[in-house]
Each structure stands twice: as C-alpha cells, then as structure tokens.
Length: 104
Image (tube, helix red, strand yellow):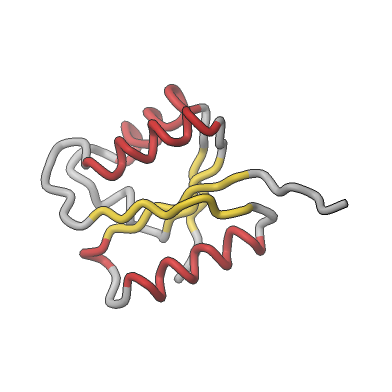
C-alpha cells in the first residue's frame, strides 16, 4: 500500500524570481525532500495590497485542506508590506500552518 504524504502548499512572489516555472519545480522538489506532497503553489504576481490576494487564497486553502505546512523561498514573505510576523501569525492562527523556507 502506498503511504499518503501530508500536504504542503507553496508560495512564490513572481517579482523575486527570474523563472516562475523553475522556482515552482524547486519548491515542489524541496517539499518532496521534506516528506510532503505539494498540493499547489500560489503565485503572487504583484503584492501591491496590504495583504496580497494569493496569500489570502493560500490561507483559505490551508484551512480548507487542513494543511499545516507552507513552503516558500527566503524573503518571499518577509518582503511584504505587512510585516512578516503578521503574515506568519495569520497562517498560524487561521490555518494552524507554519512556513518552511527553502533555498531555490
């Protein structure tokens, strides 16, 4: 019987990567290396709002799927308008998820 791995979601800021497809592949591989199944990667094209749209979608999806892990590259959360602590607290409080940063 095949063992089901826990779900993880990815988060990428497209303004911080040169090749979005390559970056998505790298965080998917990192998730697999950490023992997770990557369910989806949320791409933030232009984080111009206080709480970016793709980030809110990520929080909602983590809640819906009962996923506890988000994989992101260093700086993809900390460079937002809203301080990193607020974004991480939102994930922890609303979705009971935590972030693992991986080098791309």
